[in-house]
Image (cartoon, rainbow, N blue to C red; front, side):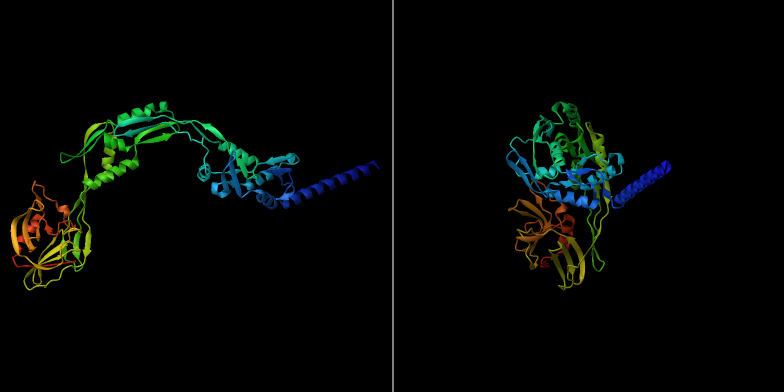
Length: 447
């Protein structure tokens, strides 16, 4: 009898264990959360993950209100302020408890992780409280070599840590009270004493940029002041020459000192009408290194230039050979070029500079009516070498003008409409054309 009772007890116990295992396996297979857990105060025990997620998500508010006292600072969709709830992580944590059989019976409330964007919140707030004032670090300002000190300012800002706790502890509320907290500047004026010394050392820089023993540019206090910037690491501020600033300065310097290559100009039939001219490009990288290596020094730096080859340029033939049986001059204003023809034969072709837009060179067919090796304009007080008039004494062909004080316009003006209406040539080309042209020669001007 005793043995029978023992056997019966074993049978009953085994059956209960098997049933419990079957039940547990069924819960696991159905992915049910059997732990006594809540997420944000919402019970999700004895629910599958999908159902738990749906219940939690349904309670997450789309509209958020931030208040300060009686003022509503923001009211709108949570996505506008970068507010993101992550209930999936909460459910994953509940599953971990699910697998800890010793903790299944203990009640636990799991918070919902929240991500928010402080800058987005500040940008969406419609009215900042009067006492809101971000802390301002101390700083140094440099103007033409003079260093000014700006003292730090402590501030009053929103306590975003408290806001994070409010949202985490009350995830489904949707309405939260912002509070202010005193904030202190990270960098005080006393922290910048070393930085000020670094600036003073940089401002000692006096560099002369030399080309062929001639000073082309000076880098002194005014220039150096504009190049100085600051790098901040934690609470340390270092004075440096900013990369972007020196690159911009060197680009402007290169445009000033480099000589652009003039292209080799060809017509579509292959005729070369301008052999072009090599240019010279300032070696910016070398100069940048020389400047940075000699900060705080007084020194001459030799400029280095790299030869630049001319590119090829194909243009349409602007001239019409055979417009006249004898000599004639044809000028195309659109290309700023002049050709000297003798019948079908083109003897010369030159680049010119015609009248600017406000004083244009006239179009039409004219005749050379007089020549003067060195004409003088009383109106503009300048000389016009190798003058050849084609409209009275008002318009003519001539070399680059020479002003009464001895200044002569450079050849960089050629190819650009810039004259007072006459057609200008280089001195050499003007002499060649002067000797070739006879009084009575036809001049055809067109666009």
